[in-house]
Length: 335
Image (cartoon, rainbow, N blue to C red; front, top):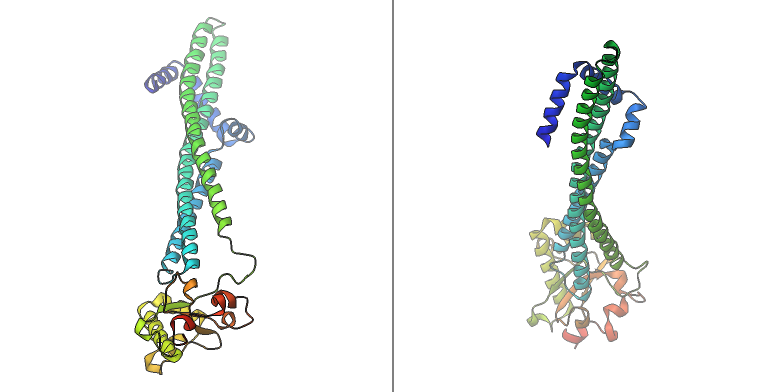
């Protein structure tokens, strides 16, 4: 079909050189003079606008992929933490990260599809522009030929117009079919993207935090498990062991160290053995002996929690002390 169209177009140019020259001039006019250009774009579509939409979806895809990666990175920060709250939070965030990544993939696919569509829209625009110019140019040339020959050249003029229309119809028809086919293929992508976006919004609603603290979940800056041989020892021994573990964690992980310093300024120096090892700022945080019910039944867990949450009448007190007791009275030296 393409070869036939090219051959017909070449024959038309040879038969009607005047019409071809006129068509070139008319094509320039259609492409540069308003409102003719705007009317033509209204008819065929604006490739620049489609390209802009394609770039928008590509940007959306890039941002979603970045957010998905950030969520995965944040999940890794929870590797040293445990408990029912952490387990539930990790599951929700993992599901959200997976959905964000899937949305990013489908957004990229839509962007790629629109990129292809913009190319086809531009091709159709150029073909329609050239087709109109060529047919009009040939018609003007035919009128000149018929007038110059006192009507004797009319059959030749008609033949020129037929050849030109045949060439234009073949090329434009093929590209319009390609454009429609591309648009049809885009629709399932949009449907899939809408479904994934709906899932993403539902996920976001599922893990949305409560409007205000209700005491069901308390904050933990750091936790460690005491050696069972130390369980029955004093609170001071437990604090020393916890401080030593926190010091080791800070020294081994620069990212963790920076996060701890933001929460508890000076914590690195306070828990360091070289500084005489002290507990983190006692006005802000305290070591809490976790009740087994709050840490999946584990014994010996010591957590660094905000002092204001650990002090009555805090709304977190009952959560930290189920049945009115902390872990020290169950597995520690207070039993």
